[in-house]
Amino acid sequence: MQELVGQTFSLADGRYKVVDVRQLSGEAMVYAEEIGRDTKKSSNRRPRRAAFHYGDIAELLQADKTA
Image 1: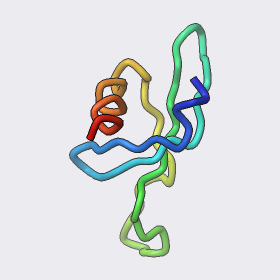
Image 2: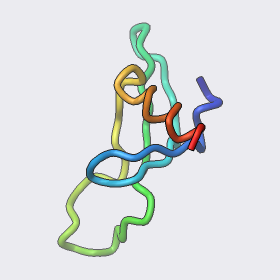
Image 3: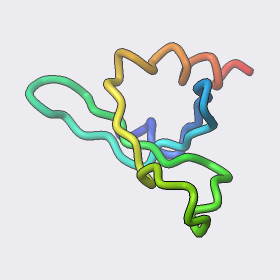
Image 4: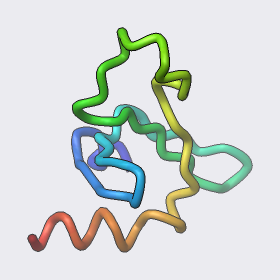
């Protein structure tokens, strides 16, 4: 699963880059950071990293590979 690190995917609210993958209780969790977000803006209160279940974003990662 570490081969996912560095891959990117898009969601409705932005574009993300995978920074870490962990196995937790038999399930893969993918940690990603939003690309191009200005983290210095005080109005932007979203966390720097987001966690996703691999099964929820697997198709998004595959779609980005073929694009």
